[in-house]
Image 1 (cartoon, one colour):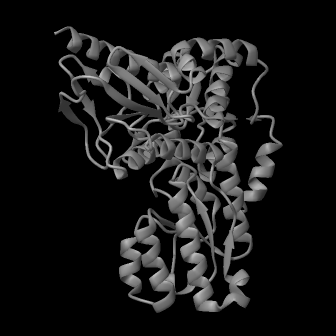
Image 2 (tube, one colour; image 1 turned 90 degrees about the horizontal axis):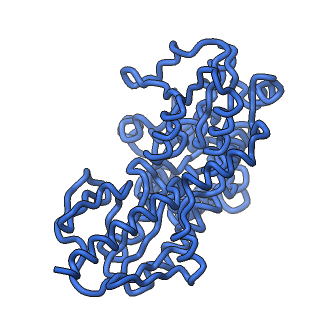
Image 3 (cartoon, rainbow, N blue to C red; image 1 turned 180 degrees about the vertical axis):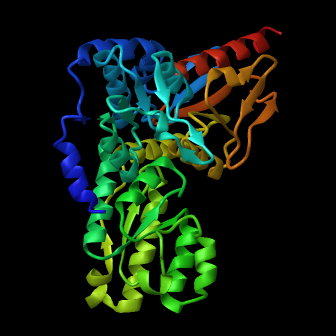
Length: 402
């Protein structure tokens, strides 16, 4: 499919909406009331620190809602306001935050169900309103909805759209897109649908495997088995790794994306020589500014003298998980929770350790004065962080009184 031509055609359709509907003022007040926090703003205004009783809070200098997320949620709210009685669907979670997605359900926005691993669009009728989430949607989904005659509200983050443009440039130049991401993440599914030939690598280790194959060859069947869910149809590593370009899922660790890019650039230089590098390797900066800012702030936060770290965000949020990784790698006890409800009486917390299922930790808050680092993913409202802090203050106050 000529994805570029399809996007141009869609942009010219009266049923396609990429901007709001003129209800910005109304929606802004609503979102401020539901998602912002006076306490969090107070901490920002006071050097990102707050002491209450035995607890000193160290807040990351960049955290929480990013511009793309705030824009997507605002557009979803505007859509409900603009179409007060029409049936509204969304193809996936608007963002990876349970409270925000539940709020949309409360507004009578229906989520497309997944049946046997596939989204079931049979429930969507022509004329229905369909929201595409901040992560975007595959070009095949867009085409299907367009053919049905749906009113499409596209809240895709512009940074994600930038990556789509990048893989389309790879395709035009007959280069394979090497995408640093998670093959089953909504954003990467969408990005790969705009690519021609592609290969998705999860981390530096997988990229090193690819680099070794480029330089030394290897077992084609073993390669295809290793990346069985992560390549385009008909992918041939002996043919399709001669010309490559780099792209990424915007929420991956910035440093790792840069390492992968440098590794593969060096690999192609070794194989084809510096004079031919530009014919075999393409690189564009697709690292999201907001992701970079939050990760940089986290690297700064872990330099403080902290007893523990609390990372607040959806458990399926890639950018939140990477913030957790930074604390864990620094050796700081870290607790990833998605809401204040995970903090229970008796000094217990239900949390998600890195790459593991939910666990319950007892006596997780140490006795006596403690310093706690706090950050949150790009899909987490300040109000949720405030609720977490209040729960921590409450627990420590009870413990101090005993």
